[in-house]
Length: 255
Image (cartoon, rainbow, N blue to C red; front, side, top):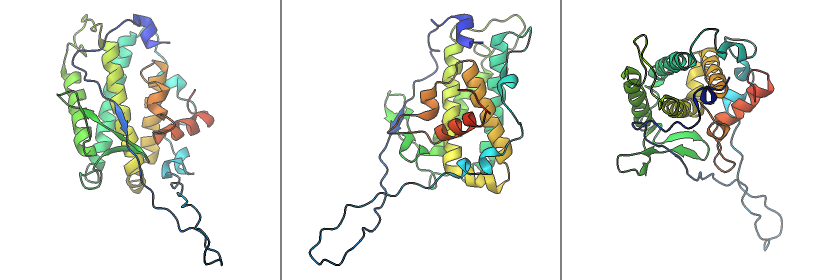
């Protein structure tokens, strides 16, 4: 079932949804000591850049931790007699609220000092588009606050998320909700990259993994997410891209 096929692919972006773009930044790694030899006049070998440690969320048993076992396909399928617009709207509402609750618990650990950028990988920091249409780096808590406030305002706007019976969704709804999804994905990406150890400390990894797997499965089923958003590029990969591939190999998600 394609969300966009069901209403046409010619929809324009919602006018209130500002564009945002990821901006890669270079990461500097300290070189390891080169191997020395017994020749006094020998030329030192080139510095070796150490590979980053494997993220905890990719390590067993954490990567397998979940409340829901099996494939998420059956969970995200459109129920019989349910309007697809309503189905997408109510799920986006739930994803936002659940993610917001998780971030509320972790917000004490996500500060301007600990997270000076909206990092989501070893070489990736997301940037915000300001009112002057310029990309600016923001501390992660500021970025996330902007995202959550923006999404909450959309959810409270009956012109975007109708609440009365018989009220139609705006033609721009698919583009708007797709943009919402992309921003929520960035929040997930930062929490996995920078705060997964704190999620483990709270013993909440089964809940968080299941929420994120559900989010990914729903986004792919209704074309709210593109693979490039999840995985990034070869030069600036998103950390959770490897988690997507691991869960796909485990049969939790579909390609």
